[in-house]
Image (cartoon, rainbow, N blue to C red; front, side, top):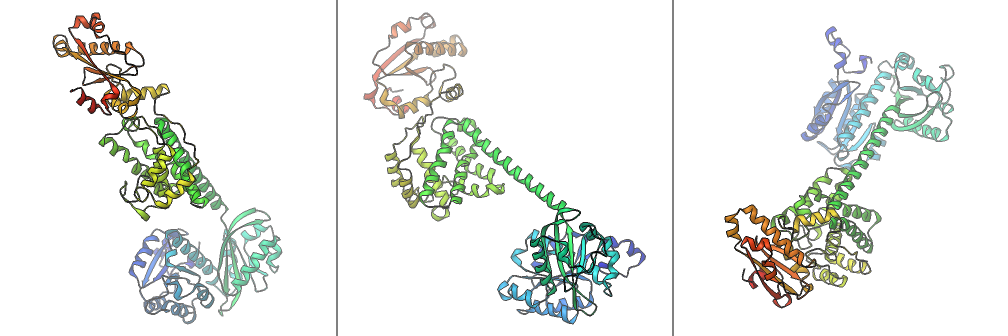
Length: 630
């Protein structure tokens, strides 16, 4: 590229060798220091044609005039509208265009008060190149705006540095890779560069003097060209991206610019049109977008795979996830939510327990009630799930919903202790759906409620745990729902192994006291008798033999009790004693048991105390310990 389009052409030989680092000069005019700082920060590493930006700073229109009067190679002015007066910026535009007669510099108005200078009026009345609300100029938009302005300045500079005649720019045209042509007020081609001629498959003499519309037969293209030429002939800069079909190149994506050309007398005499072939960039963008979508889909599949992993880890959670999503959708439909909101709620519900992927197996897979520490650990699945989802754009909204499903309407929930309207409506719906499923699902330690009982509890908690409007909708939406039969009792070999891990005593393979508590609280009505079997002299046996021998003895005694009747439930308690729950009233023959050879030889004796189970009314192990005075 020639050096004439940059700041100062008069250079020493040493400076000439450094021409590649000459900057594009940008003047920031704004009375807010923060705007200067932010602008320079965003554009600090910006380069165009491998050249950086150099900033001039003015904090008023007056300061800007002083800089512009001395510096005639400003490429771009980023100009505030309201400064020392409400129209200081607009007056500065007049000064630049009328008094300085500077038609080259690109001017982008930036205002924080768009109502004070309406965009349509400003563009119509003033020769500016772009008009932006300051809130629009995010990192990307600001760079895009500057890119287009500097590019426009560069191309104008190419055409107007030697404005005696358009023919003087023939060499520049021919060396440009962009497709450039110039048209007069009759839309006839005045000049065209080699790149353009090659693209349309025409010779120079067959192109100059011909109407531009003859080169593009498609009516839609002709209409668009006519519209943009007319606007540019009225002094407007036009910029857009479109797909065009060329004789030689075929379909190409083009970055198209129309800008007015002023002759040496400052009369608008022609329109310069610049086609930049951005097909490669567009294809790369599409490829990048396809890759992004693929990554999103891969992440979606990963997330749902994690959900599936949780479901496979926990048989209760498996059905729970789908049921909560189903109930939430039914409630949302009853509340006349939009399809978009219902879809969002369904996705959030399907992911609402995703955080359990980080919950330890010892907690997640425990079929019984949680102790205090376990409960604290299980509660963390909300924040864990939120952290998993919030970092991905497509899941941010879902994260904000799913994290709410253990909050309460009265503020007594977790993790945020939110209440009332602090919880989104979708969050309130998920709270009700999640609780409804918990009420109507069998757990080992808790029987499910019937539909009427669940509704009664929801009404009772209306305005406390649950949003009143959501409860009203749920009572209607869920009145005919079929409640799935669920169980946490083991079925598969893996579930049985898990069950044994939590509820079987590892030494004797009979049940432990944790499961005894569960049975007492949920199935006590099914048993007729309870037998307390106590081992005597076990300490003496351990001392005379060893603890290992003692463990073997206890294990063998447990096997004897198990063999008495398969239906009996045997529980080991306090290390060396047992409770036996029986559905019949048959008593044990303890004398026969004590005469078994290995028991008789050990010196250990077994005694039994049998009671009518229903009469003692025991619902916890503590109740049994008090009754049997253990």
